[in-house]
Amino acid sequence: QKEVEQNSGPLSVPEGAIASLNCTYSDRGSQSFFWYRQYSGKSPELIMSIYSNGDKEDGRFTAQLNKASQYVSLLIRDSQPSDSATYLCAVKGGTSYGKLTFGQGTILTVHP
Amino acid sequence: EAQVTQNPRYLITVTGKKLTVTCSQNMNHEYMSWYRQDPGLGLRQIYYSMNVEVTDKGDVPEGYKVSRKEKRNFPLILESPSPNQTSLYFCASSLLGVARDTQYFGPGTRLTVL
Image (cartoon, rainbow over all chains, first blue to last red; front, side, top):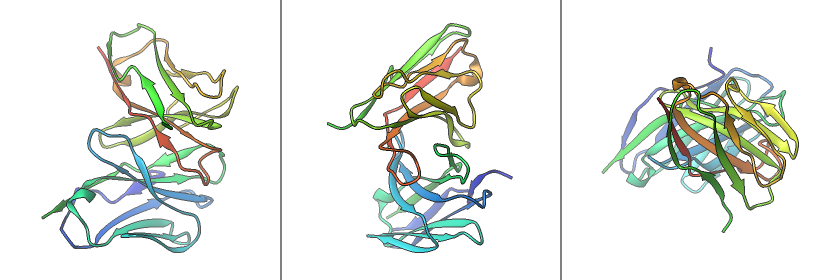
């Protein structure tokens, strides 16, 4: 089992729809969870971080964390073509101060 | 401008020829890290450094070396590159670590080993 696994894409949604991206992790001691966005040919940039169970909202983005089920998700409301990118889930495990594990990424395409 | 810089941006080399990819940040960050990105595998951490002279292995350290002699620089060294190290490499930094701080990524170095 991979340490961090994302739902396989690519994911295609129409403009204005909700895009749902999911990620599961294996280390029960994991403490910090991140979503990065990476446009084609560019470097990753952090868009959301979440540390406790529940929802965290920032504009059109909502991160959801369920530690009991070991999953974290990202919802993008009112999706725009500019949201088309690869979304990377990253998890900081419980035993290392500096180790960060990424999922394989999910390609999202928002079509007009 | 606050940034992470990497050099070179593109490099084609041959098997066994030692190379160094430099990484520098101007944000006075304590933490720096190297990742490689391969299709279908996402980002995989190679090494990280919590502070000067403190480095530790990530998930895929084999075939790589790093050093952290100064806070701002964190070079990645491939002493005997092999074709399976052909990849896109990213350097990143954050203020104190990865628990709560935002990581800022460099522009990437695309390495091809023939």
